[in-house]
Length: 115
Length: 112
Image 1 (cartoon, one colour):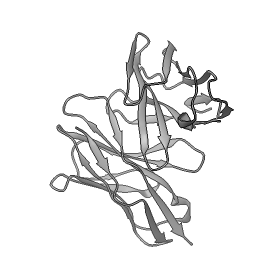
Image 2: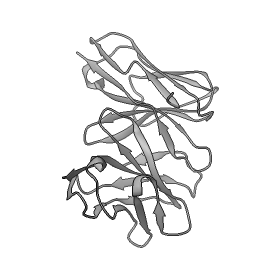
Image 3: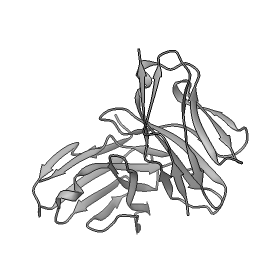
Image 4: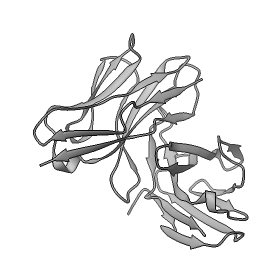
């Protein structure tokens, strides 16, 4: 069965510092991995995805994520946080190996960037 | 204009009332979804549709029904609303290749 874990309910970081939001996953086939961001009173927006290839993927707003197959992790990172990055972040996984359609979401991590 | 549009954005209703949430999209995607978001639980899939003639139950379909009126329209109904259906509801479409989801702005439903 597919599952996603985001071990931190909240991450606090000072503006200008690097940030990491953690995610681990479990799928039976090849993982298709995604990060989404949700700003207050808005829908989720796609940030980036890993399908295959280079383990470091780059996405919108300066975010990147590193796929680590041995640790089954897909952590979201940004070298220098902005106050405007404060939002709720969701990691999600889809089982690409079986051609599955179903996307499973983590519970979300709230990022708070302090000026 | 938004690619995925949901109406209403906010609704307060009473227990036992029938409620319909509507969704329309201009992405041209065949696959559409309804999700429910509760604090601390992430998103849970209610129903999904791969085309107009294909409707499928998700993880938490009890108490809900859907209708796919056209490729671009997918509505969610609560036949008899109850308080524990108070939540934020999202409609989404998905990219046909890799499956990234495109969400509407959400419909916040409160059942008193």
